[in-house]
Length: 137
Image 1 (cartoon, one colour):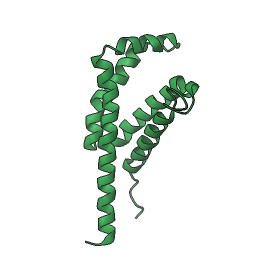
Image 2: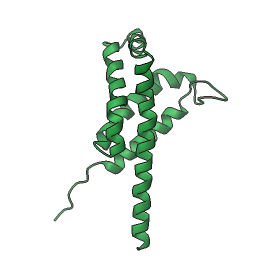
Image 3: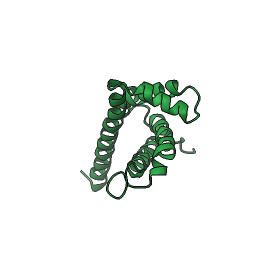
Image 4: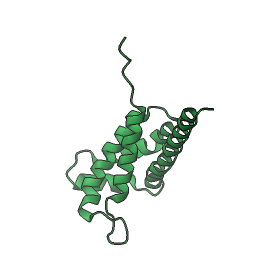
């Protein structure tokens, strides 16, 4: 096995692990919200922030986190799912976490560092899995 092939295998394995871990973290958000009755309060909060159809948005975000994550873990529709998750978490970061500062714990509370990490990881996965144009003949 050449070094290039071994390097390619490591990259493939690293991306697989990253997809599975991210899928688990994102699924936890959706399942926790659904199982604890948090969809309706989340929708009410979105309404209070001036967004139309808050409960619909909350239900859609929850469904994306629950139904999209197995597809993400399996490597299906990775680019599109990651871009959708990025949109959700950028919005959440701006609306919730940015006003609280950078740190999630320690020097702050409820900050944006975790969201920033998720967004970067999801963005890079979207980029790596993006369709490539066919080479010119």
